[in-house]
Image 1 (cartoon, rainbow, N blue to C red):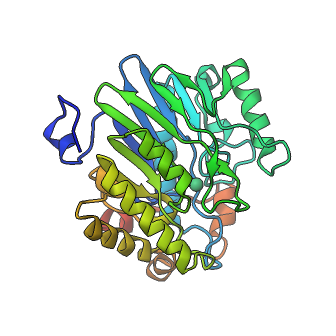
Image 2 (cartoon, rainbow, N blue to C red):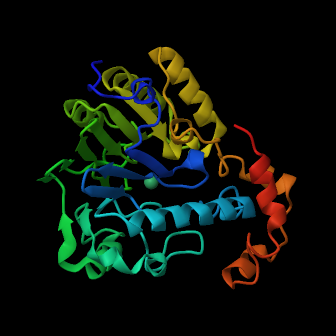
Length: 331
Ligand SMILES: [Fe+2]
């Protein structure tokens, strides 16, 4: 694949491009796929939201997840303080700020005062769908600055028509993908496509991207059968062979088997396919995948989550014992 001229060695070898920061993803310790793209005169934050998986295997987020989640939330807020544009790929709670956020998500109250002044490029509303209220909330926040962006182009930004959130015809709706033409090449954000539909992958390849940040298949869900796995595998190979750098993360890395799948896909493609942490040259923190182990390793008092919600407990208040293990966690 031809590389844009002027790339640094790091960029050319698939390393971290200085204009792309991935802020939130499962390999960075939280649910989400938030990133910032910095262009001359324009800074775009895509999917400013996060979640921790409120209940997984009967367990609420371990305090180490909560501690990392707080750090990621602060990083998203800092990114919004200097952004010019926000993109919302869809309205799930790990992708947007929420009026009714749980204690582990990004709430409207966390947003910097200037947030409503930013341009917001949003996926279309589905008035009959369960996410309708979230669209209305964004309309109130951004007012005339909110544009429904599906199929639009604005300077270096282009947006896809709606594509399936996972399997075609599934119950989780649709998502909007974003293409950004940077002076250093073409970047595509394709969250939650899960590699489970050809349509989204065809569209990405049509866009001829140099770097793609995409959500991989949710292998941790029992509903993902052999045919789905094969479809995701084939689509993953098509993408890996057709784009400059492919970064896969999100649903895929809610389980350790997802990490093994990523390694196998890299081997089959004959090239490195990094997760977000690899790309950012950070330690992998698959905290949700390892939640049960964290509970065994650092037991949690029964009332911890209630106390946290009420502001009586937290990683900053007597929670040092929960921060230390994360600092020691290797790749
Ligand atoms: Fe998502």
